[in-house]
Image (cartoon, rainbow, N blue to C red; front, top):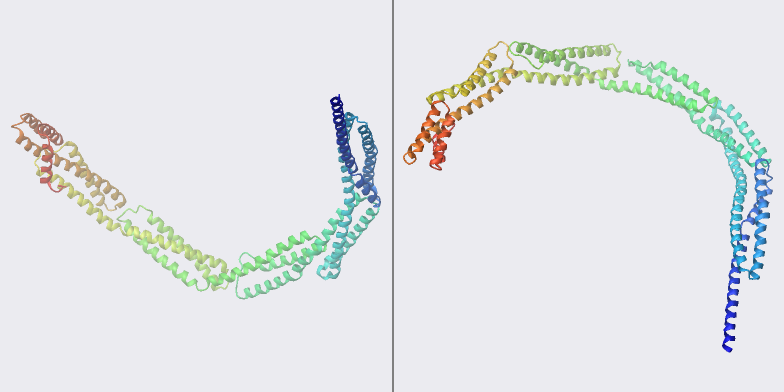
Length: 569
């Protein structure tokens, strides 16, 4: 019985402990939700609303503020109040141990707090942006006032640096001041969005005014000081150069100076109307024109230094080239009577003569300009440089032609000597073969020899002509050399075949007693020999002899080569 009582007590204790634990768990949850509800952002929004009411908003700014304030109030009265009510109800249910209800309501409260917090954050961000816009307007306007005052001070303190632009700048100052007044008026109404638009327009005006105050003095200084000083310098230099007889072929210095003066006037007019872009473009063009005039004069001064002392050198160079050309043409005419000039030597020399005459004519015109004190030194310097370059090239061309044709006579002599050597070689070959008292020569060899002989005769006829073509003869000699080498090879083969046949027949005679079959081989070889088939005769007896007496062919060949000695041809 006691144990049952103890068991019941334990069960009761455990149940009570579980209830207490669940209630404590949900109390913690509710405490966290209560803390979150207090931190949703309503305090920041109400603080922001109180601060912004002091800005005296108006227009679009007021409409936006009112809209967001109303959204906040509606949200606070609906979801905010609902959250507070649900927290109180859930706390009561937890006290009544209705844990199922508590769990459901805690989940609903958690979702509602998250939703309301996000909405509060959006409202707070929108209100902050309105407030920040007003603050930005104030800061930007302050900065613009400082820039304006600084620009105004500079313009009034240094009005001399702005010349005829000053009246227009003063009008611009008044216009910008009026824009400040307009911004102030809009700002005073509390419509900060409208003020922002006006401030942006004002910023453009102030920026343009500051830009004008920086750029106009620089451009005006060029127009009043730099360019006029350069014009005076150019005018003085032009008079001095003309007094020294300088000429300017493609540039009218006085006309260019007048154009620059007109350009200066136009640029001043543009600046008086505050058209800085047009003035800057005009000044850039004026600077380019002035630099060009300086370059023209400097070019002529430099060119005079290049021309000085070179006239006589070029004169002598041209005269020398003309003499060399005259001698070359005379030599070519003489050689042309005996040789065919196959590389357009005469035509090239004539073209060079014409070019030399043109160079000489231009040089004489330049010398006359120098003598008449009307030189355009840059042109004359260019003519001198071109003439020197071409004269060096022409000198080399004429040298190359002379070198090429100077060897014609030696070439003719060399060709005759070579032809004589070929004729001598042909006679030697035929004489040596004749001394061998052969039954005759193979038809192919006779045709080969006849062809070589014909080539020799043809070249001999070419060399005997009144006007010969050494290039063509040289090519024929190359062909003759090749054919002569082939003929010598063919003659050598005949001599070797005849010699080997004799050597092999002697060997066959020595072995005929022991090898009767060699008798028939000898007969066949002699028959082939009598038919002028010398190589076949040698091959026939060689084969039979080697079959009968192995190694005998090599001995016969060694003996033949030992007796033969040097090549006969």
